[in-house]
Image (tube, rainbow, N blue to C red; front, side, top):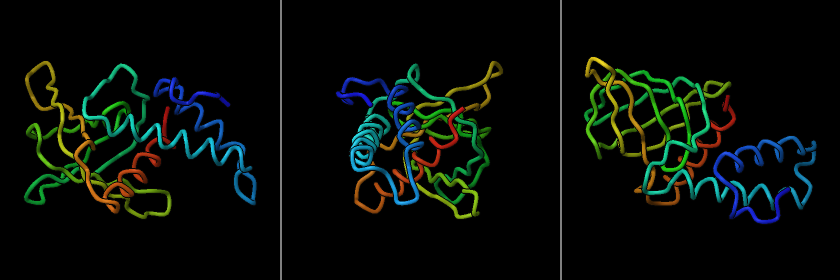
Length: 161
């Protein structure tokens, strides 16, 4: 375990969390590991909910997701990475910067995890067609909304490549 979690990069935090996950026993985590796990998770959420998107420190993740924009229009996509400032999703639909969206992933037991965020970045393919979006959680407010984002992020991190 690292003594100063505050100095770890996003990728190092994800690796640290994966290491901590392996120490779980049927009774839970040993006390020291539970404290470290809480600290690492808190720091990861600080990074993911940062107001500015920084993609070079992303961790790759390939997981199907449903993105719902305003007016209930849904599109299937794939989360490609999680990192500082949010998640990056490949979609083939046009979105607008700042547009509120709802993300939903399915877990193994078919329970849908949903969270809301805003489109922070748009990319287009070589032909100028909509290609991918980055979703920011920086403006998420309220305990229930923050818990949903937290559950979604840690489910995504379970599927890191």
